Image 1: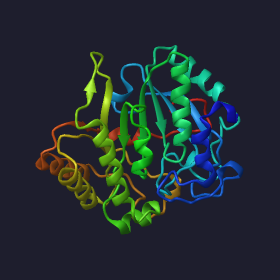
Image 2: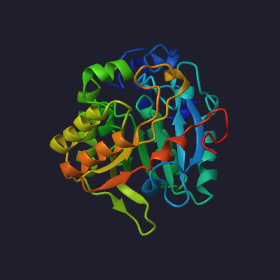
Image 3: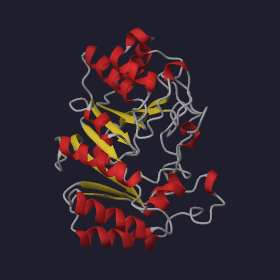
Length: 312
């Protein structure tokens, strides 16, 4: 329903340049851009999720809003059921008030954190949901969970609305970024985006008495099998370009989906020796804040978006 949105923000879809692809398509009348989503809400799932970092999920979990479509084409994407064209439109026919009702019902169970997953191409809707919740007297901790292929100016428009940034930093090498995510400029784009997040939040992660983060930035990096040297380049870039004081979640959870079962590089899980090598480099670079994962974590992050709760 158009009247549910801020009209000036909705008009951004008419000549869409929200993300770095800057397709310029009119999403009010179709889904012809790179993300293959129109100007609708394009929400695949709204659910309680306990799989984020403990400081994000807290003791009760987080209400995550999973958007369909994506502005990257990561060939190993664990959310491929909803990130590909024409997939994952479970809440596509709901209007904003219905979405707010669903979020409010989850928050009534004691959940105080609301996360927006893969939001880069739907930032106007992120804003509308936050404003809608506030109009109901609800002020959850808000989390922007992104692949970091974001425009810095788009992120700037979220200042004061997002409490926690949860960005990925996937690659440094253009060749690897192109092969795995169809974005040779990923590193330069992501670095500008993360610097904007850092400008807004700094390196301090504010944590309350319950052990839940309330404000700041937590940077994620997934170590890919056979690519420890790329992970080390990523860590060095973060250390030299941003800060060793930033909080990092170094993830070992990679698990090949069916889409890469026959891929010569990505068709296996991560070796313990590979992860330990990257951890050692992280420590030698002087990073002092963050989280590591157990090697068995790869068994715990397999969503099924045909279910009401994909992670249930």
